[in-house]
Length: 204
Image (cartoon, rainbow, N blue to C red):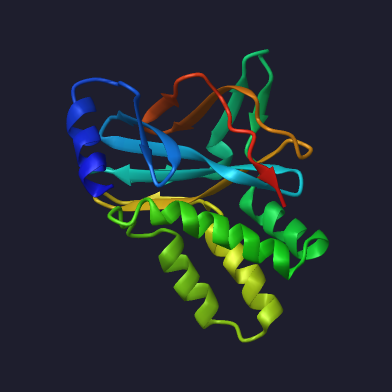
């Protein structure tokens, strides 16, 4: 994955071009603007009313860039725009309405996706957050909530050379995202990916 990621960085350095590839059974799209690379894939499962995508961001610029899940949208082919749900709201709902089994399945799905990215090592991603959160709690129930918190992409200030990853949640009433495209906007510009028909996936 690291080799692919580096090839992508080199390929798109001269212009904004979406690159598509498969890894670990997932279909990825990646795009670089102003030395910042954003990569995403649909996760093959939904939890409650949420559809989930995995996002990874690498900052190859000298200036820092702020990454927020709320900056990610899904623009449907019918013109409707879905905004990502803030990470805290998703975690709170999982704690209130879900159960430990839901969280375990969510963690397993996300870690399964990371298996295909074993050579891409974010400096401030899920693994780092998981180690931090789980070290701070003892209760099994709280650990489950902490694991869910670690998965969600949170607001992060990436310095030059840093990278992060996380899950972004869209409230879809338990339905697939459908036809459309993922768009992310940050200080490096607009990352508009190729239109697609999102995978249906399975629901927990």
